[in-house]
Image (cartoon, rainbow, N blue to C red):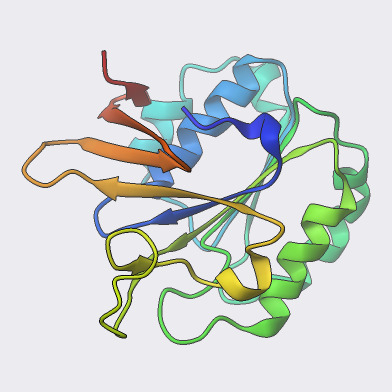
Length: 195
């Protein structure tokens, strides 16, 4: 669904786009393909969602995954995992869900942490996510008037992939990566391409 071989990705999710399920879907595929995963998140989703998307994995697969809940302070959680990240290979994934708060200006320090993580290991795959916000300038910048958090500081490192809910379409989301757009739909086991 999202090409992770082209460098670091910043998923900017619009209202109702369900970036959490997208993250879990990518985690699941990485584990299935024998990769290691560090999944950092502000808070864990509901247990049912975790079981639906990750519950079918073997114990061996799940042993290749580390989950870190960072709440409001990501900086104290990053330092202990830097050595692990530096050993990651090209099939391994670092995913930082909701790297910044979904209101107000992004913290400069959090943006620097994201830059440092991306530069720590050029071999691994890295995804960060945040919620899109409306462009109040009236210029309709971004994607249909939605803007990316931290775009000025991170835009030259992370490629933006937009996740937008398709109105009046139950469980369908548009993934926009540059000029490419695909429709995905949410199943119990995560997102799948619409055929």
